[in-house]
Image (cartoon, rainbow, N blue to C red):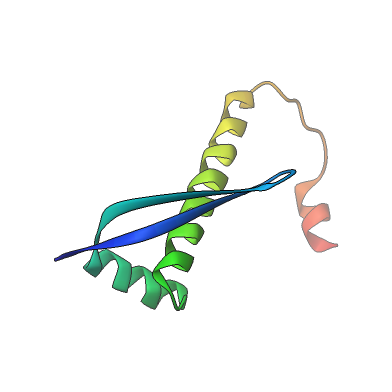
Length: 81
């Protein structure tokens, strides 16, 4: 079952930009996301999801540096602090 919902996307820079759009969302996915995140509104779930996608994409970019950095130190000592 799908529902049609209006989403507002906010970009904060020098001004706030609003984007209104109609999309179909799978209500079962929305309900599960609301249950897992304890968020109360569909808008909050969509914003949270977009934020998580952005964070994940930024973390993946770090992988391109794998093997390029030499690290020296005692990991066990650092963990005991």
